[in-house]
Image (tube, rainbow, N blue to C red; front, side, top):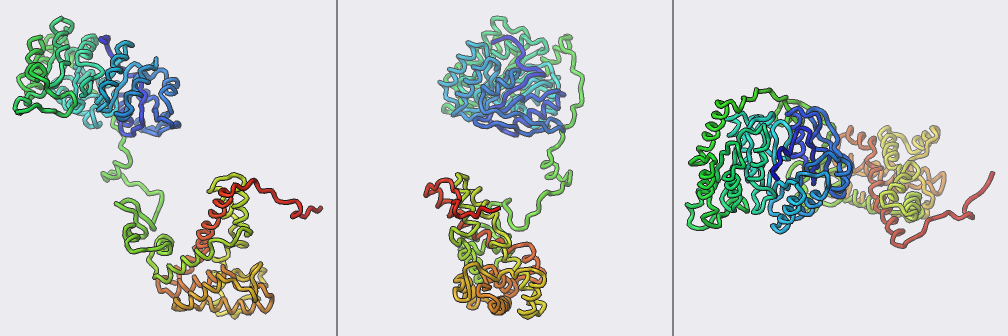
Length: 608
């Protein structure tokens, strides 16, 4: 593997299995380092494509999303790093697919717990094809001032504190990603900082070894010294011992193997990583530290002394003229995300939507302040939910039951009315449920089912002004306006609408007052003297009775009643109710497998 540098300031990666935060951290690091191009060339989300919006400094950019690894590699031939955030179940297959792409040179496997047999196959393929694997169970790696993988080095604040926005002189390699962050900070305090840092991963079989990277660092001119942090378990450190003994490493190596405390336990101890388990004296931290010391590495007496020996080694190199301290630079500030800035009280931002009827921010949604659990526990019905979401208050039970009755009575009126006909024709044309429903709903208006609001509006105005039925009807006639809520194509004086009778019966039994309905009946008596079919229809019944509900319940001011009628609440009842029937007609046609509808010629008057 040896060779040299694997990352640079122009390195670009493909990110597998979209994760917003790690990608944004990579892009923020790019901006901090003064990169001209983002380090993430593309995202691979199996089965998806399009773009993901992220920030590159202050600029919002769109990063392409590809459905397959092959498609991404073809679209971004210069991207040679594959960052795999797949779960341990699929990480091996996707990593192997990436390794087989000619453009991919480095694969970082973040998941831990990848089956060992799969990992061995990946390692074998990578070594045979001169490719590099970081992980499994790795946080990744970083080249200071140039490129980083995912969450390597943590937050921007930590990166700045560790001076990772510009290159130093130290090459660092560790098994642990968490300890890497700690060591970046320690190294930055006593040296000019990291040039490159790698976490090989904590699984039993890492894709690359500590010695692989030390030998690589040895070939990078900018790296003047190396720091290694190993751990008990396994024999990886002994390959480094052999490299040191054979003189393959010409630069100072400071090393420490963690886990010396394992001897304090009476039985074998499994530490955090799968590979951090001593399998005998040879794999103990003490034995490894002693072997490294004997091979020529600088090994402190304890972890606490590690920072000191790093400083001493670095200072000696400076003294010998082998290191010229890196001049400090001030990195550009990373623009703060709006959400974070708002939370910290640094900025004020206007909202874009106002909502007063529901809130989904807590443990459970609330309708007009009433938690969902309360709605269920108290046995609320559809009418109660409508009262909360439409009227923003809990109406008395007789009111919510009246709402439910209106919905039931208006749910359907057969297949021949215009709304149902439209829905049926659309369904038979093979269209989906929503298209069929909307086709029917679009017919609702002043001539079909949409007269409830107008009926309420005109009846209320006439009654409140004290007009007699004669004055009201004749006044409307002079204006050329039909009286909304009066008249039916089928129903008449001798064939009353049963729905109207049921509504009137309920209101007489439960409403405190039915003054508006009584007025509507008086109007009906006058219009019937003109024509037998000018009866009070269901729109007029609902419109007048809703006025009685609003005014008689004592829960609405006059201004609120006027606003409800003006906005169109009452037509909403018909829309909601009739949707049930229109959906039913759509399902009925689908179930019956009815063919495309064509209107018969004999039912059309062809004329010039």
